[in-house]
Length: 521
Image 1 (spheres, rainbow, N blue to C red):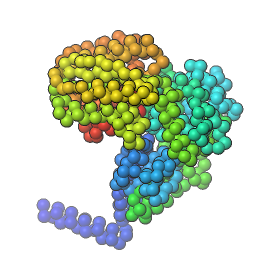
Image 2 (image 1 turned 45 degrees about the vertical axis):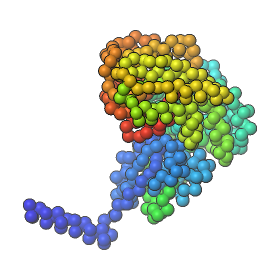
Image 3 (image 1 turned 180 degrees about the horizontal axis):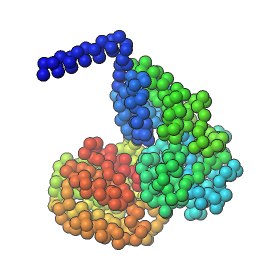
């Protein structure tokens, strides 16, 4: 044992000596507030650390969440999102950016099934316009997936691009332009049949639902990756309308000025021809330096870049216009556990999170996550069974509709057992009926529970019921929330079966989780 300990000490002394002499690179950790789409870079982190001595510790978040955190003074060294165009318009967030450098490029484009593109004459059509795309979406011929512009950068970038193209595209959008193109944008969004708060989740869902969809809007890199994945029944034809598109340029931003030396070293390496080549090969994003030529996996097209708005008022007006006027209106069912175990703080947290969605939360993320104009909301609190189903129609100009929701939420009381599957079955029954009566809405279910199913039907009984539903009703997704002592396996099973997603309110606030889910409704 003494010999072993001496060897360990000798090894440590040798390591320290080599470090002191500069013969081994020192590792400096930099914390990075980053968009979730950058997870595909993680396999390259060891290489980056070895070459630069910089270890990256990623903290993934949504773009608006990230901007809000920067405005609030989040203690990070770097920020890295697909673009920083909105962030630079936010005075509180932009003032924290000490430097930024573009690292890679990926246009946000529309991918259409090859058979559709062939039939419509869109393949290698240099005269194809965004209005041609709008016409196909408006007629119902083009049903596509796209992320929520208020939650995800790819949807946000696409919205800016389409609006700019429809307004003429020569100059940056102005507030008055939005009213001029609002009707055409509404026609375009008639074709949006799947939404999401994440570009990665959207791509996965497209694979699962490709039989009923004709394409999706996403980063070029994501679409190229899908074509090479072997998961598609037919490849996607990437569409680059002649008015242009907007490209994500992935700027790496320095937030902590004390880390300038490490930042410069990192940026210098990331922009070397060797690493840019590897980025292109690994992630299918375009190199940002001219020394690296595109490989043959990229379409041989000249990209026309549309101007980005230079005013926060324009961007906010466009986002609110999408949410309240142009997107397909939604009908959200909230299946909420109010069993006895929810008594006290848990119930209070639930009530607070729900009331924040009525406009009480005026933060950057809160104002975009609140219930929207034309939306229908169904509250279904449950314990030993569903207690009191209540429907609300939301009208932004009528604050009374939001006040009704707040008053209802205040009446919730905790008592009884936990009949998860009986309550979920009733939610699907009501959602299916609503869907048949009003098919021109986007339907979703949110299931929040703090415990295990201990009353009512079993999971097996629910699955038997679920598979007997009409096909359209089976496409209604359930987004489950882990809270308190909720059984993770059960909630994951429900989300997987229905095509939804699990959100964890054990590791972050219930309020934040409800805001995240709004990007999927």
